[in-house]
Length: 82
Image (cartoon, rainbow, N blue to C red; front, top):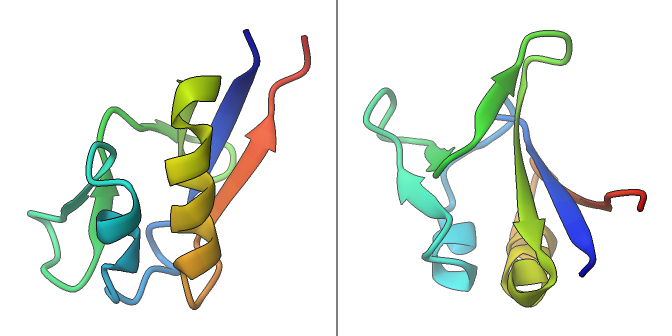
């Protein structure tokens, strides 16, 4: 089964919250900053300063949509190499 890496730039987020509507399973309004979102289950990559999460192919469509609706491109979806 194909896996995808979600890369989320918390600092770039401006809190439009469109990603929540696209993929409610993965996004929640941040408790740290009401104007941003948190990636549920995401882990901070200390090298990049961005949050990352590996998802299965079944969740690709919703997460890809959340990346597409982000007006500041704070969300990226990358296929994980097999």
